[in-house]
Image 1 (spheres, one colour):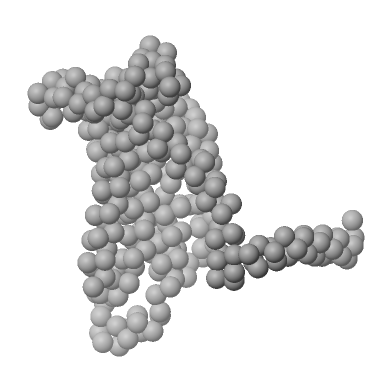
Image 2 (cartoon, one colour):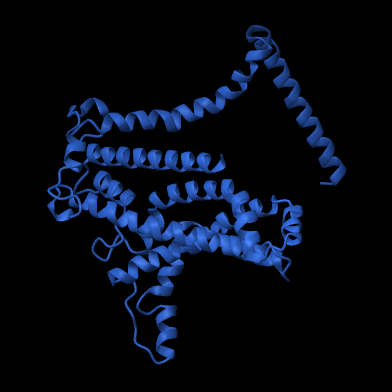
Length: 330
């Protein structure tokens, strides 16, 4: 189709759509008034939010207070806070073996370790990469694309690629053997499995946060660096007293987003290690999935209670981070 014909067709269709919207919106505007028309335009989004987010959230709270193995709410007996009591019944919270739901607390401790090292390592590497790519270097656009490319891949694809690399007869072991070393069972050793779970997650997500930090760096006025240079500040002092203070709002966004995503890690690790070996990479969301949907368990109430605990924990940590961010801003 010629370009002019396409533009004409597009303009005709667009004009017809806008006229139709105008005909529908005009009587509604007369009825609601100009100041309330905003609610009309927001209504479709609010309906989608209510059906797909708010309603399942409220339903999950209800399920957390019910028992049995039945799926439909009307068939489930109300048990109050029994599911939460089961999760928090422990002789020693630092020893999962003394807990009624020992798998829950193993998942909690594993998730804490994963979040600390994954978020810390990823933010540090993303910041270093953003600082380098913010300079005038050869092939800067190419390297930005290279670092962002893993973000475009499905987590399942990422896990399958790295599983092929790390398995017993994988690419990494082939390289080690060719250099005279011995094969290492990376995915069958608990320490190695935890290490590679963190590394793979950082590799897959770092590009997204790197771009956010890069945007924050490019928003800093260059005049401030010129003033610091005139005052005799070296590179480290410029970074410490100019870059970091002005980058903190962007850094706060990165920390909040990366923390939420790290706590919710599931699909990538599930494909890479399956939660093993043993329970070394068994995290919170996998506990919820196994508890709720495993054919041997199917305890929907207990899984819902665990998801409520996870959601409230994320909410608390997010509010704390936002509070700290506001305090630093003032």
